[in-house]
Image (tube, rainbow, N blue to C red; front, side, top):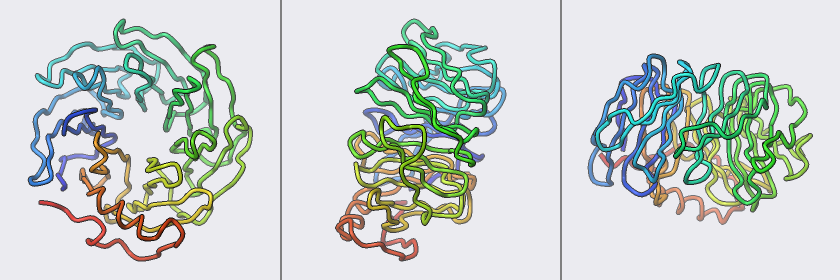
Length: 321
């Protein structure tokens, strides 16, 4: 399935329990679609959420609201059913809001263009933690619920670890000489994987964040804009070249390319709530939903051992228009 969003999308998110997907666009619009396997996605809402671009999108409150962040410094909560404004924090950050992630059912985190991270209580609509973690934009964040630590990557080339219990920056990596663009936690919490501007994946061991323990340099020469954990051993990686690949971690190998957006940069990846679809957005204006059953079968056929250099094929993912 695919749909032309009519503008460059910056972020997407799936509803936690229904077949809904939201996307934020460069023109400040928030779009909400209902999808199923037998028809094209149906647009339910188009909301002018921000005066500038809509860079970050997340469902909150069990999917009853959509949170968006923007370079206009604001964070907006929009009602999923009506599209009406629930709340707007006009000066949520001193700089452009670049990323949003869910932490718990009642807290979210936001990151801005100046390296500041804030944690918000969605019930009280108030900031409960602030971390001056970086000197450049927050490119991505992920959360370890077991340890209550928030990890972030930044354009300053470092990885940070924020301790939410103690309200302090727990650790920060050494400068990696390249911008870090994406981050996931894998290997049952033992490894942190970061995508970089040069296409290299940097692997950090949990608890040893000063320097990476391994580098995977054979993935791509293009920036790895997004990483999405498929399981503890495999990650889906999206690049500036438009290629989406399935990558094995320890042993490090490109298992196979699985999807593409022609030659247009892929901005973000996300799984549907039931993991039946992989969603991707790109500068080609397209939101694409890829069949996860085909991904699983093609990935399992290699038994996790063989590197496949086959080109992207319609046999891997089929649009169900």
